[in-house]
Length: 442
Image (cartoon, rainbow, N blue to C red; front, side, top):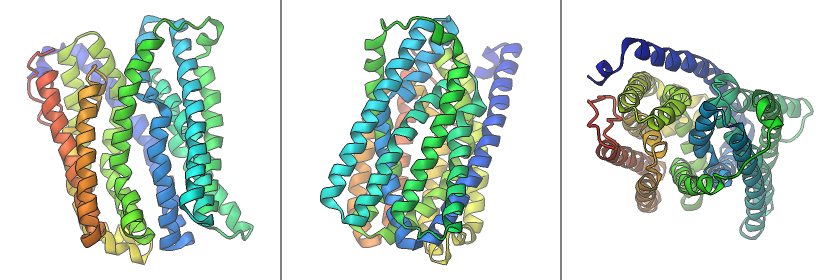
């Protein structure tokens, strides 16, 4: 076993880091998911199925466009900030912070303005107002994403998630409560604007914490000698993140275009429930991502395999439990969104199948993108994107949300298994829950 290649002390240290950091991460995410689901159960009841569908479509566009707005710096930060912190290179670290945050801010504003201009041409007045509010949501989510990754590299696992996953939905719930108390009429544009307001307040709080955490870099002069490397790495990673999020949001967007807002709302509710399957794996990835970057930098293949296998097995165990819960109690859970949402039970089961494949392959994306293999990863994601588009266009018109679910699970399974095979061949690491002995290929 590859685990035997590491001495006992190192294995214990790695387990302590993963379990300890993940315990904090899971605690924050549990609170965040609870608050987020409370907001997403309240919103469809206040907006109705069609109003919630319009809100979900606008939010889907924002979640897709926020990824190009980040320019790939949320992924490249894992590699470069980890390296600079370990080397004590505060000058290069400050340079990276300035370039990444400045670029993300400018590009977010540019994309936001483009969203409003396009919406003014292709939508009605209500749709324009909703998209304008969604455009205001773009910049804070993009910047928070980059800052959160940097906080992770400094092992501030609580802070890296609290402001986005707990404070933002909690603030949204407070704002929704205040609007109801004031007897304000809640519509899709108003709900989206309240969501944007919560995001800006969360960004302000995280920015303050970030400045305190990285206090040592503000007293040194920034250096930009690695700037070309930052962009050379970030741009392919930008493609990876955009393709990955498009795969996550494609069905909601295409259901809005090929079916109706009601179908998009039903699918969005089912998708939110299935996303619980990756809850633990995402929490473990918060901790294991920087560890993978560090192990790869030191060319320690055995450590790389150990971290990967340990993380994936824990994530799959959790995903299996959630899958069982969704199969048994899916109708009841969908009913929390409203009685009409129970009709999404069959699509929910189809999405569960894809979620199990995703959990089985674990953190395979990290293994590709944090070890210098981001371009092949991008090619795999683009192939999955083409498959998803073709299946959605073919299946949504005759089958509705069932067709969208089949397309989603098929594309998800395709890219996970393709990435698994590629990483095994190129890197020598088995990213699956099997955790076979590494081949030693570099």
